Amino acid sequence: MDTPVKNYYAKRAQILVKNLKSRHFDACYCETKEEALQEALKLIPEGATVSWGGSETAKQIGLIDAVKTGNYQPIDRLTGEEAMRKSITADVFLTSANAISMDGQMVNIDGLGNRVAAIIYGPKSVIVVAGMNKVEDTLEAAITRARTVAAPMNKQRFEVKTPCDTTGTCADCKAEGCICNHIVVTRHGRPVGRIKFILVGEPLGF
Image (cartoon, rainbow, N blue to C red; front, side, top):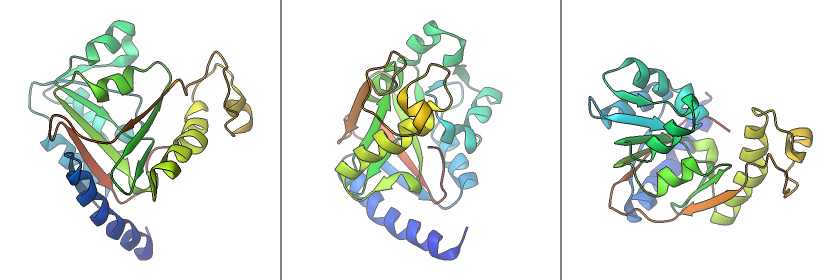
């Protein structure tokens, strides 16, 4: 990655980490996805039950594979609805964010709600790995990014058709296959430190 982009991400991350901590989240910055993987693994106790949402970012840094092959008890949501329900009681839940505002608020959009449910309540620890490409200056811009960038891009993975799947543009639809059913803003951490952010100085995910 070009040095100007690295510097841009690093300087914004310095402000964002401070703002996330002011909201009682834990937060750190890693320049590369390799560093982010090692940081995430430090936060997962051996033998812990670990589940995750449909996070491309977690896949891209190698975190899902590391959990599946390491000394952990993975709960893979792709094995069915029962696994999704069990993920709510996991020791550790892995996810990314659809967007983060510079003042430290996280925005997520969900189809079924299993991912945002686990972020809100249940797992003892939530680890959010997010590329700095998902950071916006304001909460309003973060919500817009989640609706008009993250959701239409993410929808390309699924077979059930919606307007954004066809056009790439959000139509504020009510289609059966809509994945924008739950829009959640997480503005404050409670209990303190339960949600841990690992910001990465690379473009990751959608």
